[in-house]
Image (cartoon, rainbow, N blue to C red; front, top):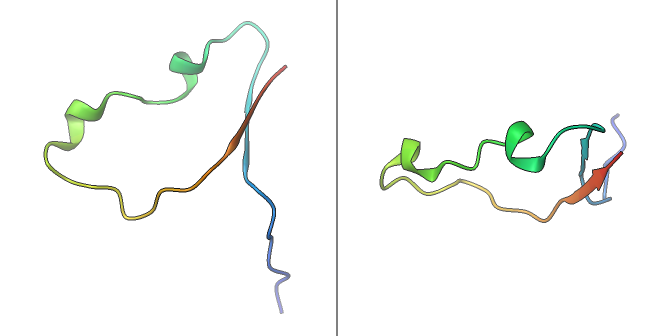
Length: 46
């Protein structure tokens, strides 16, 4: 059986990169669609 991970997911941004280079933040691609799930994540910069 898999152990349930109850922690907050973490996104790591490597040194020398900006957040908008790593994550796609352009919402125009989706039109009128809404996300299935929205959750809190931690963002860590190296």
